[in-house]
Amino acid sequence: MDLLKNFFKGDKAIWIIYLFLCLISIVEVFSASSTLTYKSGDHWGPITNHLTLLMVGTIAVWIVHNIPCRWFKTFIVLLPISWVLLAAVFILGSLTNGAKRWIDLGFIQFQPSEVAKMGTIITVAFILSRMQEENGANKKAFKYICIITILTCGMIVSENLSTAVLLAGSVFLLMFVGRVPFKQLGILAGIGIACILIGVGTIKYVPGEAWDKIGLHRMVTWQSRLNNHFDEAEIPAAKFDIDNDAQIAHANIAIASSNIVGKGPGNSVQRDFLSQAFSDFIYAIIIEELGLVGGAFVAALYILLLMRIAKIARNCDKSYYVFLITGIGILLVMQATFNMLVAVGIMPVTGQPLPLISKGGTATLINSVYIGIILSISRYVNDLKQRQEAEARLQQASQTQEVTPASNITTQEESV
Image (tube, rainbow, N blue to C red; front, side, top):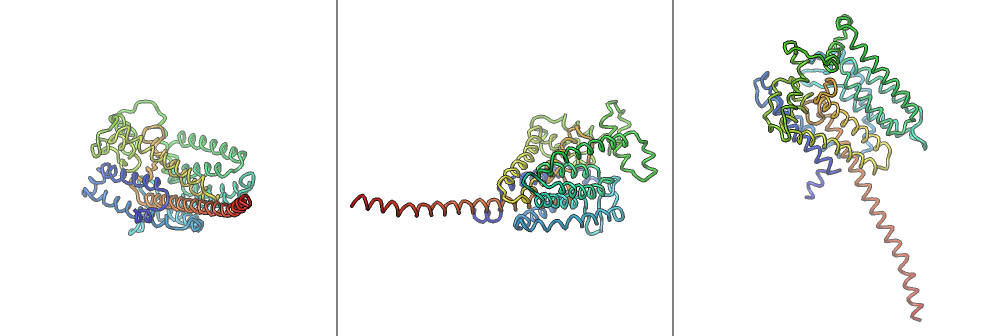
């Protein structure tokens, strides 16, 4: 027990949530990878690669959760590095599913936007912590954060709109937690809503040929997704595109054909019709195989993760740790919410994987580092609590020693 206690440091509930998510990931990715198995001809290949990534991710969790919290400020260097990598994507990026999001060097393939998300959250948390005043964050903090976020999201948005929206939303909520003045947040929210309305209208009503002529091919994909989501007219089966139009249809079939307990692990039918069953639509496969109970359990894991993060943040004595752990929690849970809302047909297709469950490379490793940071801060909080308790005991013992001689003197005087 002592060996396990020394190995698994930090908040035990976070460790349990992480291990549950990994276990569900192993089962569901193995089940949902039928299309990869068919293409590669290797039945064990996809799950072997995924297991290897999860093992590396777990090692990353263990390493990071042993790093002292004060060192995380040095991770700010990831932000300028990510800007260089995002710029390189436009030159060296490999085209996957119609978008340039990856840098493929042959021996390694990674997604710079994931590094940019981490660098932005760490930097924003640092700015908020350094610019806190008695009545809230300094007004200049808002300007600095907006510049950083606009630069990062501007380099992401053309090829990965959903990631840019996710990051911007997470930063906005983190600024709210960081006590940025409501007036500034209100103005920003108004501008954001106006930009969204103008953007949606532009994407929806400008002909696809116009976007193709200027090289913005992703606009055509977004236009198709918006039209499919908001157009209530029935589309003939012959016009379904298995990679676009039919994705939501098969996800809905997967959910509708399930029941309370599901069809059982490995018994999904719709996984053979969903090209991204192991990633973007894995939550639909989870519900199909594990039922409403399994779907609710997965959602509850993310809710519990956010609750544990909130509890850890309340016990922190340094604002940087509070903002850092809160920003990570907001980012992870918002991404999970995006994925689940897409799977059940409430939101248009976004391409966001389910954190720590969907099959992935860069995302899996970065999310594991997030968990390691959370555990490191929780370890700091536990040590802080133990020191405070020890000091309280010493103070109580000191007070007891001061009272005891006075009592003895009183007793001796009474006896005389």
